[in-house]
Image (cartoon, rainbow, N blue to C red; front, side, top):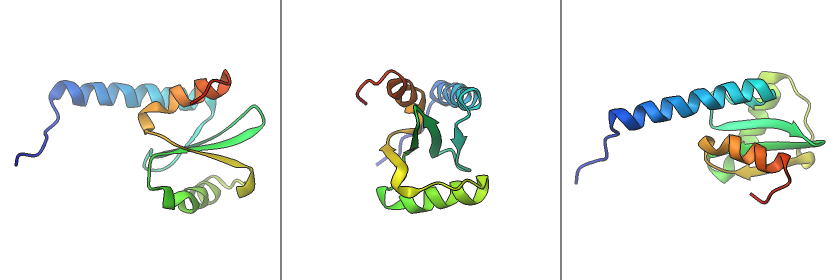
Length: 101
């Protein structure tokens, strides 16, 4: 069985979307993990981590944020959201307007 090979157009669309996300994160002061698979931000007095890795890796994500960005974050005060990394803008805007995700 042949494996799927992305087209040139789909690669360009992905690169464009990731560029939008990078600029959005810089504008909103969202902390991005080293591999761009998780995001940490504060919004309306709450802490959020949006991630798309295994649900078992919450502790690893939090540890990375603490170590790399020297943040002291209380784990009990974090809302975890499991989502595609391409949806970070939608997730952030939904939280901002108190819409259901």
